[in-house]
Amino acid sequence: METKILLSPIFENTEFDTAERRAALADLQKLGELSIHPPELTAEHADGVVGVIAGGVPFHESFYEAAESLRIIARWGVGYETVNVDLATESGVIVTIAPEHMVTVAEYAIAQWFATMKRVYTLNKASHSGDFGLIKTHEVMGSTLGLYGFGRIGQEVARRARPLLGEEGRLLVYDVRPDIAELAAEFGAEAVDTPLTLFKESDTVSLHLSGADTVVGYKEFCAMKPHASLINPSRGNLVDDAAANRAVSENQLWYYVVDDPVNGPRAIHKDRPRIICTNHNAGMTVESGIRLDLRTIEQVTDAIQGRAPAYVLNPEVLEHPRVKTFCKDTSQPLKL
Image (cartoon, rainbow, N blue to C red; front, side):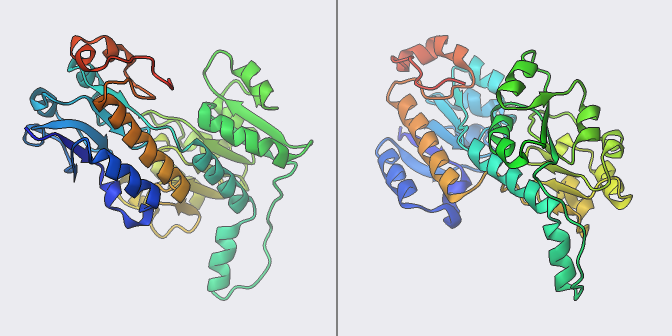
């Protein structure tokens, strides 16, 4: 049976074709036949597959049942909801993520923070429409930035934001982690007790959360200052789109920035110039694309060659009898 390795369609995207990618794929090809994976993975795609570098596609139970050679699913990115990690673990399949975009998303948040405070989008639209008048804008220095969620990306934003705020500016954070007050202090930030306080006191709020729950609704928008903006580089579902649309139209806030395209649930935002949508591009740069390529190819290579890869999402799987037959080095160079 021929060994196969399935790749995310991102590897067909010429925007991210680099010398580093080509060289790494040439090495990976020595370990198995490479092909692009289909929009969903079922039993018919499982024969001979030893590894998958996966986009955000669903993995069906039938795929796991039929994929007798499968060792690893390496997510090209960090979202893993469609992988079915529990079933992968039960089947003795390693699942990894590639958190190589923290700096990239942090820079996006900082860029949108400046763009919204300086009213870049409003000024651009006005100028192209023949309106050349001056409007009120705001300074970042001395303002208050609120971070909702203080994991790795939130901390990267804080590290960049603190010196830009100046001595008079405030950096507020909200997170449910028990050590949040001490952690916030390490970054020159103040922890607040409730999300509502964060929205009420900030000139800009930036979301840095995961999960499927909607955490920002009309109540939070109504707590904001009319000149304030919400930046969402995380997930569109975190914010009630109808509430965002209504709040912007009522001038409860100035901008809502979401890193999602204007389709599906976000189609409601079409032709709303103060709702900024950016096609899920916050984590994508040439540089982060190279890091993601190299990391995921390395993860698959490690699993095929009998080593525990970096950033294993289900480390308990390393004790699975099936994994023990092929993974002899379980030292894991990098852990989550």
